[in-house]
Length: 297
Image (cartoon, rainbow, N blue to C red; front, side, top):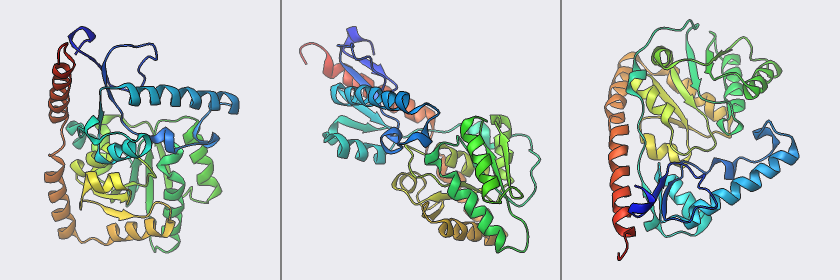
């Protein structure tokens, strides 16, 4: 959809401030609205606050001047409406998909039993709560239970490594660094469960990957996760370490037959999400917007 046809698609909020045409923008999440403070950056304070100012100017411009907005979940749509007082009709929900090839893969050497987390180590991911939970779980367990963290190494994983040492959890937590897609499937499948302790997200793709790979899902009881995963997750309060521990114990206590049934049900469930379906819905919205924006419409 080009400007000359009636509009322009922007797959991210970084619409140039000088752009004067009609456009449709995709807003994937509002994490930077929620995640504030120097713990969420590697920049010195003056540059960080300058970056945040620029972010808000560009983000607000994209939201307010767009003809239509695409969001990956109803939760993000609701956040946008509340923040910017938008008409619900302006925002269309197009659910994302996940890479189904991840459900296979080669084994990674990891002691069992273990839980797994994959993703970046930004503060909103709440790895602090997860690490405290695995330490608390092991203080009450007769046998060691481990946590594998698959996250590309950077300043944020360095902070997590320090946290592991400070909390005395080094005997239970292993940071694997970056794990390629061809190995993620086995990492998920051989785990007790994938733990997703985030305070905020726009969708929740890793949880779908984990379910498709054949493991249990333990997730924060935030609105977006309940929307995306339905009854296919064990939910907990991400702000309460004991609540995370309870969910972990529930996953550990699931019997073999019950686990197989739950995983089988979840694998069927995740098939409702696909990139092909999202692409088709997105193109339809682009075409509708094009027709609405044609001269004389």
